[in-house]
Image (cartoon, rainbow, N blue to C red; front, side):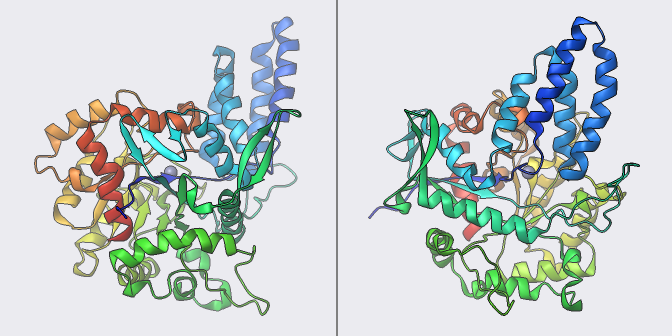
Length: 454
Ligand SMILES: [Zn+2]
């Protein structure tokens, strides 16, 4: 049988806002806005309600960046951005259990993207689309909120719950498909006969900040976590690691909703995580001893790491050194220059986006790629722009003299976080038609396979 051709999105997010009924809130806001518009008091209304809305949103949702974006959007909704906000909420407000089913349903609506359960991009057909949902560990050192309200405590967002929700969502994806019931005009889940024929393969990354693991039984070690998810991975070859990806379908279908057994001991959950996601703006400092231990474990077990690398993102109130933690010029540079960590498999996300058209981070990433054999970078949250691939090719021809990016750049979307900047997940795949054939083959297939499995 010929080798299967998969296409990879290395940077994806799946989570929901089921705790906050934002739509209802927005609807109320709009109703009142309409009323007040008549009285020509819109300014007054925005001043009055928007701060209240922020405070309502922030404690329930630590995805601050998102709330800011929604707020930004709200400010502009008089200018016609409401459709984009509604579009975003329409995905976020669904329970995560249905997330992948919904994304698949809407991909299938375009036969130029999914045809006979295969992925189509221009003239190319792929057996599957592989997506890597990256979890974010929002565990916080302090729960104090910066406002004077009565319930001035941020609710915990334990990574355990996020993990269980995500695993269940993936399980549902392999078990069902969504169909529109013509009579009721509602989605219904239909059980499918062969999960292996699904057009998407979902390989999540574990969101991790080792410091948040300190409290458990007083042990600062993340060894037990690695034993739980990556036991035996140190012996993998490229073939056996790829085999784990295929086996993941079965592993998720067998998932019973628990990470521990009857005696509260960690279950072995193999073939369910394929990498580690780090988020420096939330306090992950790459130079800390406990985090160096994490890198040791990742090297030993050949686990790829994706680290957030742009000068914006979710930031905690207490975090002051976030730039030093995130920048490829600072702490990461110190890590990689240590002999022991030169082989670390590291993906700088977002190709180091900086504001004000600065490119120092991007230049440094390319420099690191030239020196270190396992440094990669993904183009997530950039790849939705129509002109992006043209601009990228131009930039590379001027700044990447050794063509190292041909081997190290990775395609990623950053969907669902940046849905306000795009119309849908479909857009990322459609936009790949604007990427030249060679670059597409490299960033969507060859490089991600090396990053994930080699
Ligand atoms: Zn992201």
